[in-house]
Amino acid sequence: MLNNKSVKIFIIHNNEEERLLYLSKKIPDLLEYFNNNSITAEVNYIGPDISSIKNNKFFDTFILRLTRQFYITKINFFMDFHNPTRSKKIFIFFQHLIRFLKSIRKLQKDGVRSIIPEQENLQAHIYALHSIRHFSGFGIVLESDAIFLNQSGKNLIDLFSHLEGLVDRKSLYCDLAGGCDRKEILNSWAFENEHILRNIQINSNLEAHILPTLVNNTAGGYLINSAFAEQFFDFLTTKKYMLPIDFAFNLFACEKSRFIDFICIHTTPTIFEQGSSIGRYSSSSTFFKKEKLS
Image 1 (cartoon, helix red, strand yellow):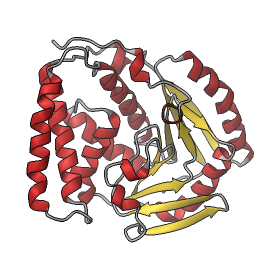
Image 2 (cartoon, one colour):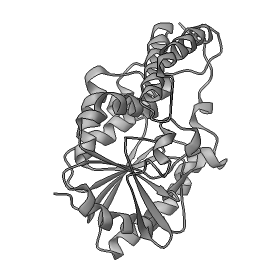
Image 3 (cartoon, one colour):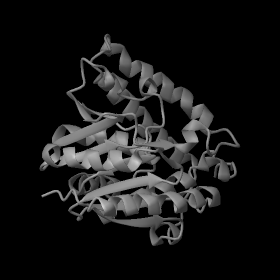
Image 4 (cartoon, one colour):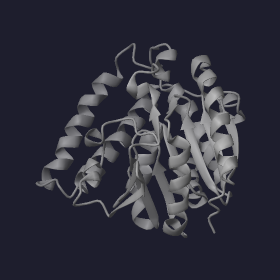
């Protein structure tokens, strides 16, 4: 049974000093707020020193990029094909095939951003999933550019109280930080009123939307339970996909969402903000130099 009085928080970082300084001031306040509301919480920082990053050699080759692009094309095709608002589905396959063939030329160009940081970031998320998969409470994963809002603590606690009855034995995924305009993301149709399964007023400032399919909005922040962590962890470690974490999630949604009992929640407003999206920080990808492909 889900324990809504216990939380593990994981901060995924790349030793970015400005971000960690900001979080070092905000995290203690959140922990104190949890403690004052009888919620036990612990924080774990996941950086480049974990063994799955430090002891692994990551590669950036044309073949890896081609494979990565194939999976991204597969995700886009699958989500387009199953989009109930799309007509003329017979043309969708050819549209995505043409896009894939065009993308191959871009992969051969020099000076493209290295995909090695993506692989390291994915390993950090896998580390968090591994830690949550046997945990009876909630797991919160935040990337280092998370921005706390005035009501973040209160909104989390109010959300926890509603989730206990909703989740039961389901796999829970709840987006916490957004990042992109919902109209621009894959499966944006799921946010339209005629498709949302249910809206829940969590408090006077926060509304939760239960969506009909698994949808993420970047991976800057999310709340999960052990059932979801177990399924996503197994998926990522079985085939070892070379994908950014948000695309890995989308591939998981494409291949597995029909076979698992899940509940997917997004909120308005989001409980945190993603600093890279609102201009507070530069994307971490800019910290890594562009390299010529092997």
